[in-house]
Image 1 (cartoon, one colour):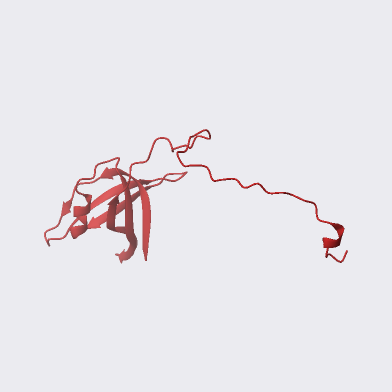
Image 2 (cartoon, rainbow, N blue to C red):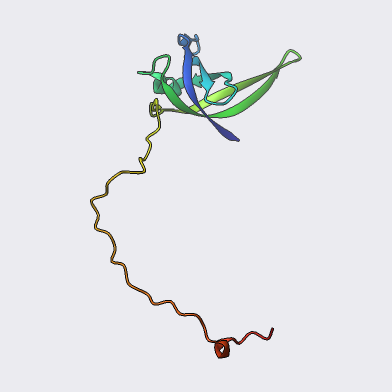
Length: 127
């Protein structure tokens, strides 16, 4: 099962290296919602490289899987990031179209149409 979250990087933790050769790096993303959430993700092995060049405050899209496990009677959930994409910086003000903007396109030609009232004999309605 995979999910996606968009937001800003709030915290980038240092990489953790283990004697087995395994390594990981955790990071926190603050979502872009009405009620923002701080969500902690983990990037494992070669996925850590996707965090290179990112700094706190960068807009990102994180695609992740939810992983669960049991250890000594306790249950744990991990959010395993498998794709981290740099987002586009949000604009401070959306572009507005002005109603009095001038277009360089020529206006379409207007045809004159003669309007006439229908005669009573043209009425084919039964009532």
